[in-house]
Length: 275
Ligand SMILES: C[S@@+](CC[C@H](N)C(=O)[O-])C[C@H]1O[C@@H](n2cnc3c(N)ncnc32)[C@H](O)[C@@H]1O
Image (cartoon, rainbow, N blue to C red; front, side, top):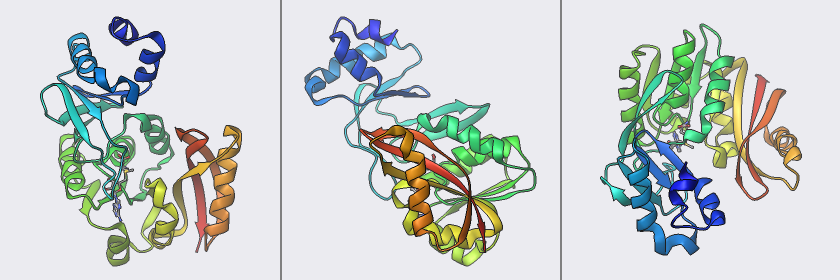
């Protein structure tokens, strides 16, 4: 559909490139535009807004996800300059501000994978929990207690709203703060399952994840890894983890979550640790 929409503006190759860089979050479209097409960005925005009936705004993502809060610069191309929207996934509702907080619709298979691993009664520490996507989807499926920590005050505030609209008060606790301090002060040896969704900095935070975990707890360790062959990426991250971890670890599984650049992958390893 999009290809047809953009067909009058762009060549087939140009519209292919654009479509792979396109996300819709609720009524917002976010598009990354290759440099060569930047002179046409307004036209692209206006065309998308006109053709995608459910969209109210089109934004050009002019930076990668960056900084401590993992947010991005968004420039409005067409429609309202309003970055708060509602998004639905696996029967859960999320209010998100795509400018003020991290958000990726591309992690949805990973979110449901984690939710399906959770068992009733678990205590989970989601160290970099953002607006609560992983936590809410898991807590809707199983009766568990989840500490959703984030250093970005807006992320913690949206998480609080999302807990309320999904009727999960008491099951998820939104905590604003640095995961290192929060774990040291209140979550030592509490966690059956610990999520580390800050792949750029997993090694820096590994000791805190271990501190949060109970003996025999599971850690989901996300990282970024270069691999010439895609089929080697998960094994290479396992090797890396085993080199850096200070604790006895059993690898339960590993996989590529998504490609993040040429020969560069986000991976996850599921690990059981002994303390
Ligand atoms: C890649 S995002 C993941 C967010 C969420 N898990 C999701 O998938 O939507 C990483 C999050 O970690 C948060 N963050 C960065 N450093 C942190 C720290 N030291 N303690 C707690 N949160 C932190 C950022 O604000 C950001 O929301």
